[in-house]
Image 1 (cartoon, rainbow, N blue to C red):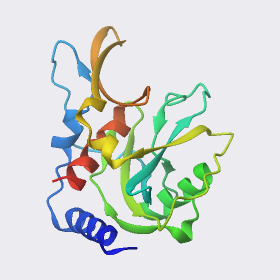
Image 2: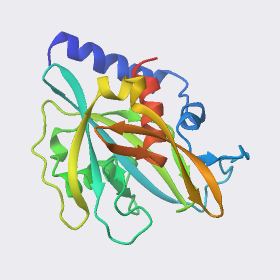
Image 3: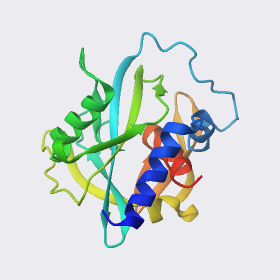
Image 4: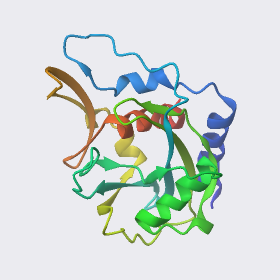
Length: 211
């Protein structure tokens, strides 16, 4: 990598490892909430939650940093059809880093040997599915040759750091859920709505990348 690229990666690694991560302050900005502003607290005890990991896989292309997002297949499951970071359940005896890389390979074809891990972001509890998601940040030396898994992924697209930083991409809508209207913050990437857990994770990543 050139010196400018290394400066960004070095700063990003330092912010992840050395700073107090913003965590829930960042999550709250993109967290769905009831329209009546009822308080929605994060669970204090996640010991009974299953553990999962996702990968933010950075690579440089055309002078700017990008990362991939996937659109899950419509499989009838709670997160079917949604846009997400590649990832999945952590297996017994597996680290969050290994799980994130393994799942990214299975879902997108990213070569595990090409991923350099920079660190972890704040684990995010998802009460509706009882998962505790560990976001992992990694970097690749070039754009990977994406190969979506047809059983799990309907498409893969990439987002630049410039798009993620663009305030006009952050929007708000309302949806009816469990008997009441909810305010749903989301990122709009060329008509693709990124909301929920993925948007909350990207909110913290954005704060770390642009402190």
